[in-house]
Image 1 (cartoon, rainbow, N blue to C red):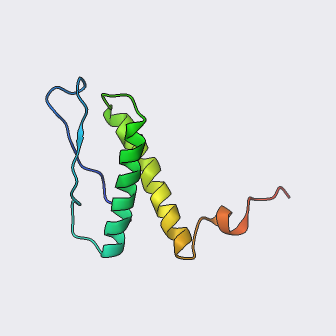
Image 2 (spheres, rainbow, N blue to C red; image 1 turned 180 degrees about the vertical axis):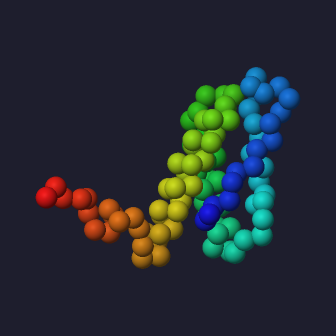
Amino acid sequence: SLIKPLQLLIPASYPSSSPVILDELPLKVSDDLSALFERAKAKLKYKLLSMNVPWLIKDIARAWEHCAREAILEYAHANGGGTFTSMHGDWDVC
């Protein structure tokens, strides 16, 4: 996986209070992957600002998946790649 799982600390008072996002990478990774993780995490923190508090684990997980995919796609585009659709267009009906 390009982006490692997000680690959360779940307080005893959950769901009355929100989980806490841990700011460390779970494993040693390359500088590129570390930058990708940090980019996705920054996007997540921005997205969480618009969500109702307390945050639910499922909402954080959905937001993390969205932000991670977005960060990977931006990285791919910046390095000459992308998705099939972004490079070749939509499928045509034959």
